[in-house]
Every structure is written in structure tokens, then in C-alpha cells.
Amino acid sequence: MNVFHVVGARPNFMKVAPVMNALKTRENIVQTLVHTGQHYDANMSDVFFEQLGIPAPDVNLAVGSGTHARQTAEIMTRLEPVLLDRKPSLVLVYGDVNSTVAAALVCAKLGVGVGHVEAGLRSFDRTMPEEINRLVTDQLADLLFTPSEDADVNLKKEGIPAGKIFRVGNVMIDSLVKLLPAARGQTQNGLRLPQSQPFALVTLHRPANVDDVAILKSILQSLLEVSQDLPVVFPAHPRTRKRIADFGLHAGQLQVLDPLSYLEFLAMQSRATVVITDSGGIQEETSYLGIPCLTLRENTERPITVSLGTNVLVGRDPDKLRTELSRILAGQAKKGTVPPLWDGHAGERIAAVLASCL
Ligand code: UD1
Image 1: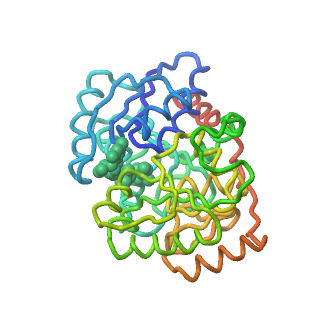
Image 2: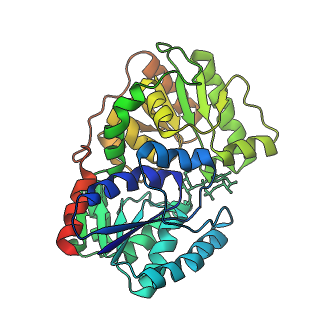
């Protein structure tokens, strides 16, 4: 049996690693890794492969950046001949990026089975490109691996038969559990903060937050206010850096860094006083780590991080950010618990399902 994995963007890499690892021990399963090349900078891709122990891709489609239509179409055009040639038994796709939906579409048209890892998450906000990717991918997938109960409920409401849904837990947390000790053992390695100093860790890359000059300016203003209370460390996504420069905005005393490696970022997260973000995965990682997370979005496709975890949605309301931050600094941060099945074994559960289906 030849199981294909298609990945393309930074948040895919920590999800594919545990699944590949778990499948390695299964007899009769050969694995092929396809990198679409959606993310191509070394610090957005290669360093994650090295640190997560992912083998070099067997195929790199090298699609690079582009508009959504171009990028999606390019992935489809370049992936189709690979699948026709190599005839996989099943293709696994991860998360909600353009590479995910593009691969699912190609497979569906070729009649190749698709498994979606991290199925069923919904923000119910179709202005988010990822929401479109999630909805389409889940309709096309044959096996849907979900991280939490809310995802199962969403899928059933959309008419997905219960027999296709497998609640396996959170694969991204598998990588975190495995590499947290190594991350904690990291030396300061370019991090500009002493071990014990409180700080806020910020990430920002959603088009809705960074592509509009007025919105980005107001978020930077709020972050500058935060930096009056505690240092703000801001590893910036290339898109965000570019927007700040293009719009002629200034990051003042925010410590803007290049994107960090997996281990460096995990080390920073585990030591942060608060994480302020618009990422999806970071809402989950902070919940696992018990670190307060303030999310600069009006909604989340990961509601369990709010109901059980440490996440608070502050949207783009500077007052709400201020109030929540004061609460954290006063030692009254929301306490969270780790959601069920976020235990480091989700990849093994996926491997067990595949072994029984293939
Ligand atoms: C993508 C995902 C998003 C995910 C994010 C994580 C989609 C629709 N979006 O968004 O869900 O949260 O990855 O980072 O798939 N760029 C570089 N170097 C790179 C990659 C990108 O400079 O290695 C720049 C390019 O200018 C590019 C821009 O970043 O145009 C955006 O990249 P893209 O892959 O289109 O989307 P992300 O914003 O990274």
C-alpha cells in the first residue's frame, strides 16, 4: 500500500511528522511525501523538516506564491501527473491551507481516496480562505480524522456519514509533546530575552489583519501599548513584514524577528507571559501548555481552546485586549484544561485506522 502525504505550508509540517512516524512501524505500507512548495523559504519550511525529523520530500512541486486561484490551480496541475504515474492507495491531506484543498480536488477527480487530517473544524466565517478550504476538503474526503467532538458535530450536520469520521485527537500536539523537552533545553540562541523576564509573544499573518493598512496600523498601535507593560517579541511572517514595509508603518520598540524555527518558537511559547496571535495552531499549543492566549480574531474554528483551553477571543477591540492583558498581568489569567485526546498519540490512532481500512 502506498500512502501519499501532501503538505505545503508551515502549519502542515508539525501535523505530518507524527503520522509518518506512526506509519513507519506498519508493515506493507510504503509512504511518499509530496511538498507542494507553497511555503519555500528555508525558515518557513526546511528548518521544520530538520527539527521534526521529516524525511526529505520525494516530490517537490515548487509552486511558490500566487493568488489563491493561481496557487491552487498550479498545485492541481502539477500534482495530477504525479498521482497518475505513482497510483497511491490513499492520499492524506492536512489542515486547511490551499495545498490541502488542491490535493483533495485532484484526488476526488481521479477517484483516489483521500484522508483529511484535522477535519471538521469550522469558524463559520466564509471570508476566511481557510474556511472554504475546510468545507470543500471535508466534502471530498473519504476518511475524516477529527481533533475534537465539535468537529464531529460539524461534519454530521453537513451530512458526512458517521462511518467516515474518526476522532483521533490533535496530531499537532503529538509533535509538541515529543519535542517540548528539546525545546526547553534550547540555549538562548539568538533570543534576546533573559530566561526569567516576562514577555508577550506575538504572531500575526491573517490577510484580514495584515492586508488592510488601517487595521494593521491599529493592531500595531495596540501592540505598542502592550510593550509599555512588557517586552513584545514578534517573529513576523514574511507577508506581515512586507505589509508593514509597503504601508510605511513602524514597529517601534516591538522586537520584530524573522520567523523562528519550531523548537525556538515552542521554547518561546512555553516561557511567554502571554501569547497574542491570529494563528489557529497557536491557540491549540498555548492551550496545551497552559499559557494565556489572546486571539486577535472575532471567531475561531477551534472553539474548544476557548471552552476548555486558555484562549480568549479579543477580536480587534483594543479595549478588550487591554482588559484581558491587565487580568493576566494581575495573575488572574483564565485557567484551562487540556482537551481529551490531545495526548501525543493521535498519529498512532490514525495509523491504526489506516491499517484496518487499507
Ligand atoms: C498560509 C495558509 C494559512 C496558514 C499560513 C501559515 C492558505 C490559504 N493560507 O498562509 O492558512 O495559516 O500559511 O503560515 O493556504 N511567503 C514568503 N515565503 C514563503 C511563503 C510565503 O515570502 O516561504 C510570502 C509570499 O509573499 C506570499 C505570502 O507570504 O505571497 C503568503 O503566502 P501564502 O502561502 O499564500 O499564504 P500564507 O499567508 O503563508
